[in-house]
Image (cartoon, rainbow, N blue to C red; front, side, top):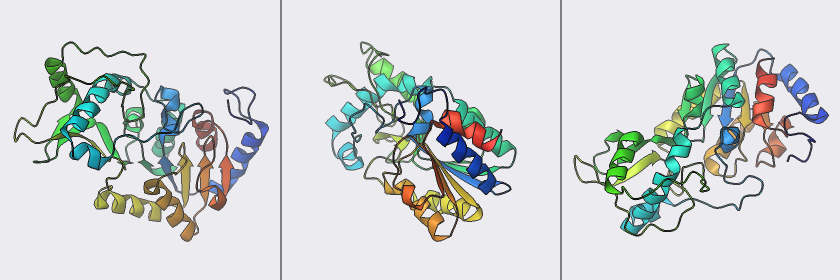
Length: 282
């Protein structure tokens, strides 16, 4: 439970005061939203560093690409956890940003999430900084496949593997299972290359053109709104640094500390599902 709230479904007086202050500061200004795992927790997708969780990093790019056993381990865990991601629905935070975009208040969304929930909520101008989990890429010929089609292949190869909905999983669909012996993985039907989810792994660079596009959108905006991310990794924090250098106001909505707290105009310590509609729409 947030330390400034008696009821997680109610905003504290401090949070409401901050919302009123921020609304005055951003009135009439173009807002770019930068979102992270915290915005999707109310959709049933856990974050990496939330309360009660032991912080851990998923498999790195080098580990995945350098070892067939590592690929087997990844796909076995992902196969079990994927349905939880695929079945997740947008929450009030996603819908608030989509509505604000339709009203011309939010110009773009840069998301560090790979769940596709902003698009499901109706947002149109979204940059998926770390890719999309619903796509799979051949690392040889670069052809893209739907995650659903790959899931069907995995099922045909591993008919005896059950998808236990009670197993803990992470924002990238990596389920907490250990027994992966005997799990079979497919290769690209066109060239036999390695299948990898079309997401940026830890240790893998975000495609430069994607970063350039995101930076261009930030440069056009008047305000940077950070929602549901601690900005613990540089791929997100660099946008806050750039906004700060340009003198753009930074507004943070997040439960817990972020690396940009000291350079923010305002920090609203509350759930994004509760704050964003009040901040942007009401």
